[in-house]
Structure formats: C-alpha cells, structure tokens
Amino acid sequence: MVDIKNILVLGAGLMGNGIAQVSLMAGYNVKLVDINDDLVDNGYAKIEQGMKKLETKGALGEGVTASEVLARLEKSTDLASAVKDSDMVIEAIIEKMDIKKQVCKTVMDNGPSHVIFASNTSTMSITEIGKDSGAPERVSGMHFFNPVALMKCIEVIKGESTSEEVFETTMQVAKSLPCLKGKRYIAPVLKDRPGFIVNRLNAPAQIYLGWVFDQAVEQNIPCERIDADSAGKTPMGMCELADYVGLDTMMHVSAYYKEQLSSDFEPSNVIKDMVAAGNLGAKTGKGFYDWSEGRDGIKAKVKAAEPSGLFNLENTMAILLNEGCRILEEGIVSGYKIIDDANMAGMNTPGPFGAGKNNFEKWSQLLEDLATKTGKEYLRPCELMKSGGFVSMRK
Image (cartoon, rainbow, N blue to C red; front, top):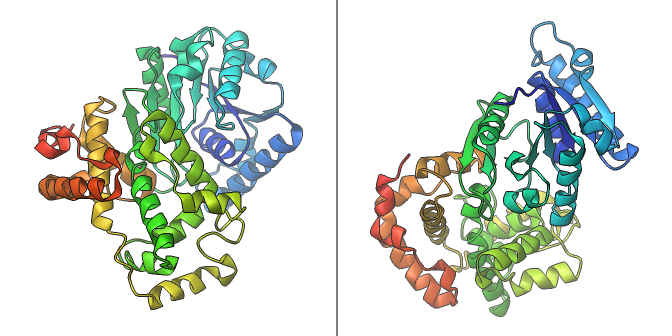
C-alpha cells in the first residue's frame, strides 16, 4: 500500500474544512486548496476555531495544543504546485462532473506518480471522474457525511478502474480519521453505482413523497396534516424535513436519479413550483412552512393538526428494503449488514433489513399496491425482496 503522510484537501468549504480538520487530528500534514484566498482563509479560520475548541476540551490529546496541530496545515490557491509533494488528494468541490474531471487530471499531471485522487462526491461516478485523468487506477471515492467530525460513516468507493492497492489504501486512510461521536464506520462500496449505499438506499422514498405532496395540493390538504401522519415516529415530519434539507437540493437529487435510474424520480410538481418561486425551505424562510414562526411554531401546528392519512411510514420502510435488495442484486456491497450499518452511521437511522427479515412478504404486497396506486413502477418489489432471498446475504 501507498504510505500516506501528506494529504491535500481540495475545496475549503463546509465539507472540505471538516475533512482537513479530521486529517490533521489523525496526524497527517495537510494542504487546504481552493480557487481564491478568501475561500481558503475562511476554511482555515473554521479549522482554527474547531481546533481551539477541541483543545479546551482536551480532545487533541494530552499536552497537544491547537497551534501544534495547525503547524501541519498549509494554504494554497495553486493546485498544480501544491500537489507536487502530496500522497493523496481528497476532493470536496462543487458537484459538477466537468470540473471534477478537470481537477483530477491536474492532480495526475502534476502530482507524484503514486498520488491518489479520492472524490467526496455524494452521487457522481468515480469511474467517469477518473476516466480521462491519465491514471484512472489511482482514482477512488471517499464519501463523507456532514458534519464530517461528528458523523461516523465514510463510504469508500471502488471505480471500475481503481486498483486493489489504491482501494485498500483509501480504506486505511478513512479508518485512520477520528470521529468525535464514536468509532468511524467505513463502508466499502464494491461497485460504482449512482448514490453508492446510503443515498441510494434513501433515494426512492422521494418518489413516494413527491406523490404524497402532489396529492395534498390536489386535495387542498395543508402540510401540517401530512406531518401529523408521522408525528411521534420521526424526528421531523416529511414536509418540515424537506424544508430543512432544501427543496432545490431535493429537486436536483431527484433529477439526477431520474437520469440515472428511472423516470419515476421526476421531481413532484409542488416542489418544482416552490423552487421556481424561490421558496426553497428553511434557508429562504419559506417552503412548505413559513419559517418566521420558528420550529416551535411549526411543531405546535403539527401537534394540533388532524392526520391526513396520505403518508404511511411503513410504506417508506418497504421502499427502503426494496432498494436495499436492489443494492445487493447489483453487487454494490457484500451483504445487507453493511447497508444497515452504513445507514445508521451516515443518517442516524436504522436500516431496513432488521425489520424487513420478518415483514418482506407483507411489505412486498404493500409495494405492489403502492405502485399500482401511484403509477410509479420503480416502487414495485424486486425479485430478491419478494422471495426473501436477501435473508441469507448478511455479510
């Protein structure tokens, strides 16, 4: 395996500065690179703030100061020059394929002959990112969850051309990065497919939610009644959660899966209409809810609302089990325990297989009925779910 000592983090934003911080905490020498000084300086300031906070809590180790750790952090706006002595580049830039491919090639053209390029993309093909780089065998995926220092999961993705040595080295680096909320969980992704594990598992729930949202508008049912359907069973109702995530984000993600997996991922009309009007959820102050009321006001509305009966949480669990079975069918992971563990480590939510082992027949029928009712064929149960064959595929 490649001996990794010097890590370059490309992208100084929220994910990038979080990755740089845990890399420093693991003992690596780190370079933080972005396209201008302001971005790099802002990222550095966030890391410095985080390190000082950890120092006051004694979380950097006995006698270790924030200044000592920060002495291993450099800043740069010149990727071609900064990469010359880097062993690994972890890329955390904008989710645009052409830009990712461009920086990957710059790394391979200017870095040492052993340099590894690991992309933090949440959805895009690792194979495609590395295809024209000149060294696709040295390109892998390293998908972190936000916030990096607190969320345990890192998905390590093997592209079609990724060498076994590079995959194993990326796995070892991922394992070495600390998590402030417990032990890291590293999920090996053996096949480069859209959404990898956690995002792919949860993606088809958007098909169902989109249908629910559009039905509510047609029937003039207010959003708090939909959220009352899952009150007490989930931390947030589905409309509040959509606002929190960002309706534009939901729309872009759905559009991506529509292109990659099925036309049934077409974003719902209500989401498209709100995004077109600039109402993106909590970040703009308005989405399904008026956020000037605050979360307490939203909770009070939901508590007082009569459930609509449109949204059924069991349908969502059935959808997740079905997609988990598709992940197994496609050979993305070696067993369902990885899917369940990755979902818990990445989303703080149990995966579907624990309950699914005892409910797959009932849930298969639920999905048959739901697909017929909604007209969304992607929701029909796959063969592995219907047969229960997944039960023997634990590891």
